[in-house]
Length: 92
Image (cartoon, rainbow, N blue to C red; front, side, top):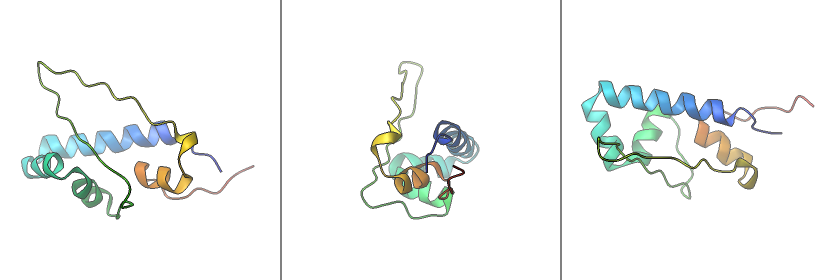
């Protein structure tokens, strides 16, 4: 089983969270104060205790670049939770 869809799922998740944060000031405040809880709220799932979530708000004087995780080095079930995707069955 592989998660070649990870980049697409991640972008979709990020867009979803960003759109909500832009539209909902209270959610944005929760996302910055407790990103893991806010993400769990948005996804409707409990994330693994070992998973840390960090949110950085860009500003006009701060450019943030994310170096994505190499998903080949982490368990597939963790990738599924990180992306909001459930386990996928292998087609091969």
